[in-house]
Image 1 (cartoon, rainbow, N blue to C red):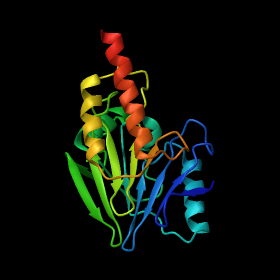
Image 2: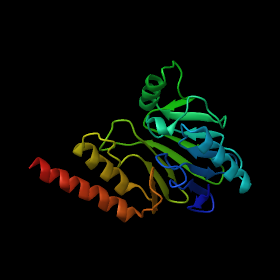
Image 3: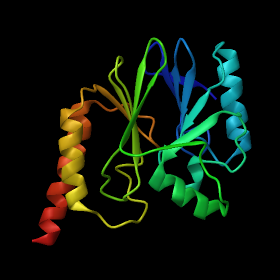
Image 4: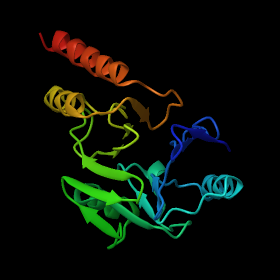
Length: 207
């Protein structure tokens, strides 16, 4: 498994390494590092840990869970980092794995982590396809992890959420964006165009 470089301090795993599993993000801070999403595959996580060792990167202190789909988390936290999710996602996770305790930390709306050299903003966002979605914005490097926010997963399209997301992303100062199951690095214009086209297509269907 190779780590793909987004900046000097932000990386992600290629989704082609393990089919049907999400990219894992890695944010390397001076104080500590953060991992974006986990995985239900212990083998995948072991390969991820080896990739960190090969690059002389420390293991993450914190894992951010961006939604409740089972490919994003594991009941046993293999890398021993603390996990954080929104309250809504945490409730879904507890139901999915049938336990009383999910994430170590929970938030509502927005929370921010200072990694020393980087500021990491964790945001609840209005996804067109679900009511429980989280994105991660690395402020200094202008990189946005949008996870599954634009992936249908066979859910109906919520055009009101799409419009809210469009306004939110328009105001956010990012120039690179990554989606959960794609290796392509999107520009802000590309993401805005995708969302705008989705909205237009659904308006036509509703007419």
